[in-house]
Amino acid sequence: MEDSHIYPQTYWLQEEHWGSAHIGVYDKDGLSGVANDMLSHMGLRSDTDPEVVVPVRNKSFEEYVDLTPADVAWIKERYRTDYELLNAMMHEPERFKSVSGSWCG
Figure 1 (cartoon, rainbow, N blue to C red):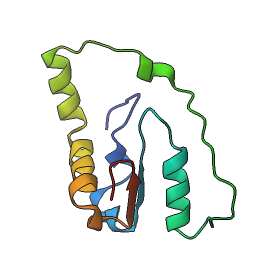
Figure 2 (figure 1 turned 45 degrees about the vertical axis):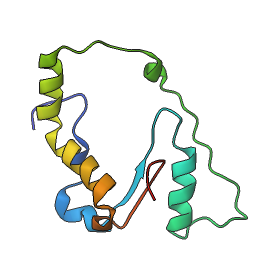
Figure 3 (figure 1 turned 135 degrees about the vertical axis):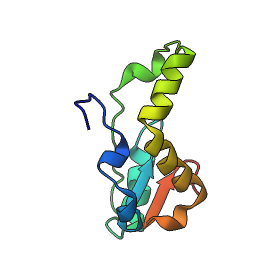
């Protein structure tokens, strides 16, 4: 892969390894809830342990950028495998060891 500032997530997590992956999906509200759910699911945190707090430092969620159709097409092609990963996480969570996030069952 050519030099890139942000590699696709699938650069690190190839499809053949999905079955052993614990996936945490988070949004602009942060990672704390997902981190606690994942640690509990993996047996690394009990109900009596203090909750993990992950501060949100990225303020870019408050900034909006207008994308042209060409920009959107480039993103969809560049990160095509990430779209496939997200689709699998949402619709085929059984393909992973576990999937935690606000939209997960």
